[in-house]
Image (cartoon, rainbow, N blue to C red):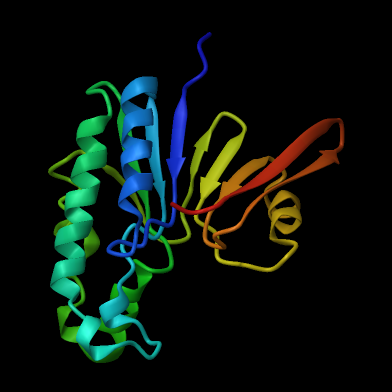
Amino acid sequence: MKQSEIIIINDLHVPFYDETSLEAVLTYIRKRKPDHVVINGDLVDCYAISRFVTNPEARDFKAEILKSEEVLHRIDIAIPSASKLHLIEGNHELRLETYLFSKAPELIGLLSFQESLRVKEKDINYIKFGGYLKFNDVIIKHGTKASLNVRSKEIDKEGVNVVIGHSHRLGITYRTQRDKMVWCVENGHL
């Protein structure tokens, strides 16, 4: 049985991504023709609605959304028609919900990334924050922790192989669990 080929991209943080890196990934996707492409959280930075102090002159949420939709579209058209595109919500996408809860609760349900990025229209599998994908014995999730031993904690928690983003670090940890070797990969960022 043929194993599925999966390409995982995380932490693009549009509009702060690197165009050269994105083009390299798109070229790789076109060459490899994977069965699945997973955007593993933080496609959108949500700088304009961050709870952190930001530069007022650099806040343009509409521009962030439009650029994110463009980047998502570029990824979508790079994959073969028989492939599936998945988008896992990261902590930066969660900023929209947090912003609405605290500043505009009347708009909850009216504004969402699913609508803004047109994921249903494009048949993109959208996984809400905290959710994950599982392919055979591998879980793909954005992650929520950035501690130095996060990979060991994920292995202990999940008991299977895990790919996480969030921390922007690259690393791999292996561990023997009962009678098998399991691993956790921190997948860096684009």
